[in-house]
Amino acid sequence: MSAKTHNEWESELIELEKFIVNAKERARKEQVASDKALLEDQIVKLEVGRDKFLKALYSNVGDWEKVLIARAEKRPYTLDYVTALFQDFVELQGDRNGFADNAIIGGPATFDGRPVMIVGHQKGRNIHERQFRNFAMAKPEGYRKAIRLFEMAERYQMPVISLVDTPAADPGVESESRGISEAIAASTMKMFELSVPSIAVIIGEGGSGGAIGIAAASRVLMLQYSVYSVIPPEGCAAILWRMPERGAEAARALKLTAESAQSFGLIDEILPEPIGGAHRTPIEAFATVKDAIVKHLAELDKMSPAEVRADRFAKFRKMGEFETVLF
Image (cartoon, rainbow, N blue to C red):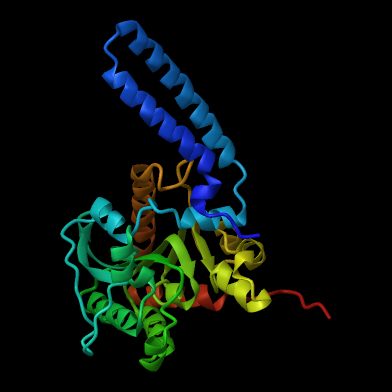
């Protein structure tokens, strides 16, 4: 049986919200005062019921449901965070090798009164935007553009803020022929070389090397309902069982939730989301992300450039350490 989509999982909630919207429209048009008052009273009760249902639905969210939430159509994307949290953003294009990529955006901006460099994956809201952004699956030129921006940040001593949201890097033949693996590795290496503070925030999907190419940061933060995994669940299911529809089963095995990532030492902090996810109350999510970036930048600012580089190296070198061996 196929795994549910996000809209299917929230179908009852979506229908209830549509009913409330229609009731509000009827109340707005109602001319009879008594009938209008009755409708408004019903709307209040419906909204109370909706809030209780929403809280219950999100009280026990499974691994696959978190994948669905991370992919929610209205979930804030990189440019939404840029608009909400940064000023004076100037998007820079091209990898200086003759290619351009729209799945990764980036450029200098101002954050909390200081210049920073932004690099992030960008998804699309409709089919035209998704095609333009290649579904946030960057090609080699996307990571080579990121390298150019990292080098610029280092040159001008600007902290790097990465916003991660991709199912994976582009798997196409053209990307392979132009060296997608080398480009991801080079981008990752360039992040390790930075002496400026770097903060990566996984705001949706953190998929495979496509994510790590811009997430080898001094601090890696993760929104509560985001996911971080070596492969998307459907891809894992297709490889293991030749049945991508078993994605929900694969999601449980992949340990891709924020809680799992933190327990394995892969991320530094889980950022709580509003009830119902960042897509329902984006303003709250923006505030949470801003506060976290401010806090971690303040901590990293206390380090010298050499200490920033050494701290980042030690952080990643420690991953995968174990104390006991079972024979």
